[in-house]
Figure 1: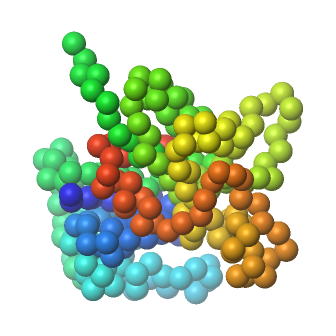
Figure 2 (figure 1 turned 180 degrees about the vertical axis):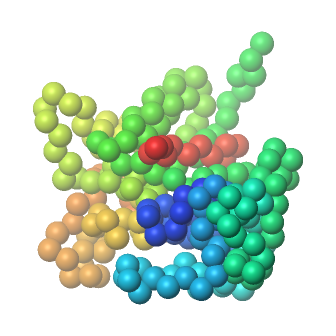
Length: 116
Length: 138
């Protein structure tokens, strides 16, 4: 059963994205195929060289870079949202695949969920 | 004609009581599903949803006590209600075992809720026809 966990809120403003990430890692730990899709303001998660010292939060960039090691199949980002937020290949972390977040994409998964 | 064959559901609640509608919408769904002959395999509280399992919620007497409503529904139907341990500990929801482990001044997990890991959610998804999420929205 393949699962797509979607994050559509910017990093650091709420905890729901971090908890969505935990869900995805947990699926991978139990050998369930899982991928992440960042849409809307959620694409901010994928910005390269995040410095969180000023807000006393752990950077999500390190968590995301560990995703392939933990068996998460793909980190997907909605192409139009990246354009809207001024993110391209040079400003995104490595390992991100740009996609069109549409029905055809969601149909490739048995289970899709937002974490909050 | 609608298909009425029995289904098994896992419910995930991520919205807190008294700040979101999620727990009561989920309870409305759960009651309707059970009344229609379906089965709720388990209810998983995640993120802010763990506040639903607090034994210390004390709403005014003219408001519905959502933790107690949920607890009595779970008990009556023998449905496991599980709060994610990572979400719970961050938000100050602890059972006796965690109180001892972290030397905390008290515990506040409402019976019959339990505390366990995300593996319970993974297992619920695997064994249910559908997993439904009740979020705070906004």
